[in-house]
Image 1: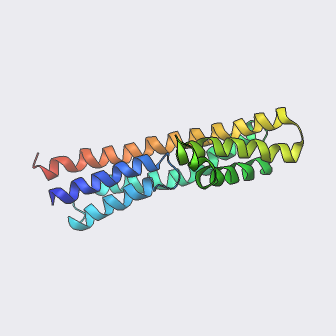
Image 2: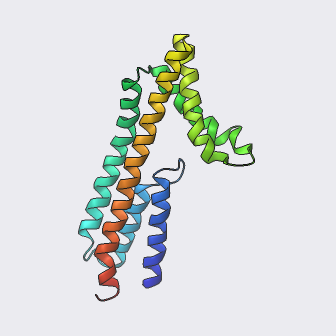
Image 3: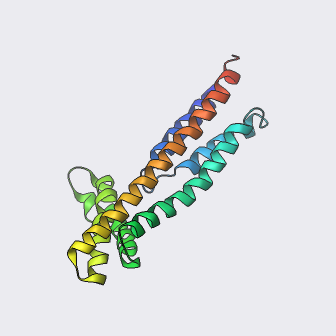
Length: 171
């Protein structure tokens, strides 16, 4: 049972990384790991961690959209910039950037949305200065959203550990 616990904690660590890395499950993975632990223990004593994980999952879903939207609107981006950021993210992760000798998909996930948003805005507005400002706004919104998701992922995991470690080791 102890081995299962630490495997699930390891999965939660992957979930924490997934809060900021595209393509890696985040808070959802943490919630599933908590639910698995609960299933093996008759859901005894994990109500709080499970509620925190589910609320975090719901918040992450909303934050991801709202932070990008806020960044876009705050810096004057159009729908073209948002679409460009999404295309840039996909191209950054799966396109040419993974072929780089360093950084690979992680660097692509950072640079891709920024470049994509700028290109999308430039195609729409034909003004590089405005496109740069809007692209930076989308980028800032994405970064803020990922930071909030990271905090929620860490909080979910910490609540689980604080709640369950004493039960596991009889403390």
